[in-house]
Image 1: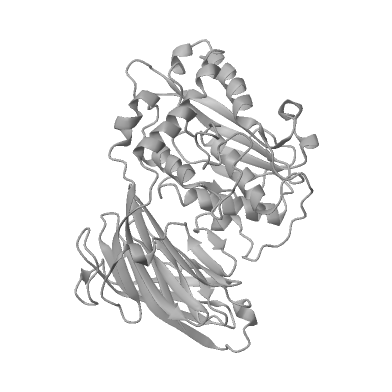
Image 2: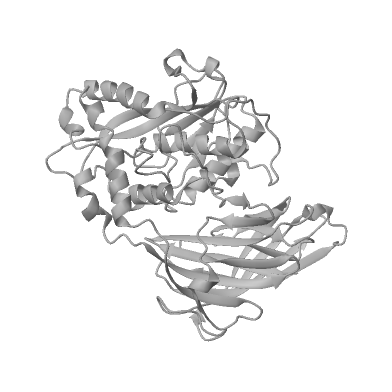
Amino acid sequence: MKGVRTGLGIGIALMLAACGGGNSGPSIPERPDLPLQIPRTAHQVPRVDLHGRVRIGADVAASAALLTPGPDHGEIRVAYGMVRDGVGAQELTAYLQADAAAFQDAGQDTTDVQLLSDGLILRFGRTPPTIRLAAGTSPVFIDETLRVVQAINAALPRDWQLEVAAETALAGVSRPPDGEILVTFAPQAEWPDEAMIDEAIGLAESRYALGPTTDPDVSLSIESIAGRIWVDPLLTVGHERLGVIAHEIIHVLGRNHVDAGRFPKTLMVAGGSEEVPADILHPLDREALLAVYAHLEPGVTPAQLAEALGPWADTSLHIRGELDISGGDIAFGTALRNGLSQPWAVGPTPQTDLADNGALSGSVSWRGRLLGLTPHAEAVSGDANLTLELATLTGTMDFAELEQWTENTAPGLIGTGTMWQDGDLSYEIEVQGNAFIHTGGDAGTVTGAFFGPAHEGMGGVLQRDDLSAGFGGKR
């Protein structure tokens, strides 16, 4: 058993780690347009700069043209319906089987070949890992790592979310404890000797342990329990570096390199994806994470995949709202597919930070609407009211008169549903540049932003175990 762990640890670490390519010029970190992220924001949804518009949440919005219009909720134009926008079971199964096959050769170096004779759908332990950054990591690289973690967490179930440690690792620490992934930004010349690989800009190395399997013919399987990641910041720059960080973290989460010709739209090809999406992960990357950590039991073999995935859908249920403001429109809503609810909101980028808007003072309010879905596909709608004290850049985000409609039913006119829970939710919020996050209040996570040239609008998302929703409003 010890031989299996040692042989596998060396074999797979080398197979997974070499990630070359990318820009060869040096990078000079600059403060991003969006606020720098810090470890406590790991569970906030991504905030994505779309060059003139800002999106809160994942890239899952369906066009209003693909949905059925419903009754307006005040100034909000509501739409609802199903859209075929997923990867699909056949493509996902083929990808995971190709990924698993890469471990077959590694098994030949172990004393128990049966563990890997059918390949391996590797995963990270039973509980989510904690990302810890090396001592001395700059705030910009911490920010970039947090943005990647937020993108990955948006694809994972709410009960399996990556954490980011508030404290960096002690100087000189190179072996993370079980349950942690240590991330180091350093020129390759400073990487450990065993990690020196020509033209690599990133490297991932995992530590493994034996665990149970669902296959009655194989008594034990293998899972990752800790990992180390290196990224050379001199060889990759800007958005590409986010792709490198994500590529290496996903390696430690269990995914291997696959053939770029067969699967061009994934970060997990040798050398990394030629194109890193605005949301960092490709749809196939997101669906593979969801499948492994929400639908597949530990130890599932490639041969069991089709049955274990169950009725994997390629269609999503969408609820969407729109309203007009100066400078464009605000759109918001939620998509639900294969058990994962993903709320979102998007609107035009302000010209200045909120604190620098000289036309505003005192207490300022925005009023609008929330639209969301419960895990049981019940539509939920209600008032969304943000009140902010500009002197302190703090305030409250209140959701009131919340009502729901029956499962898989479009929302009707305001007042035709039944009360959702007790009908109200309230959160304290603080502003960061043109964004805001919750700092207290009811259970759940609120992530938002201000929209419009002069902050005429606001929008964002609410995430709870019992409700995922987008919201938007105008001043």
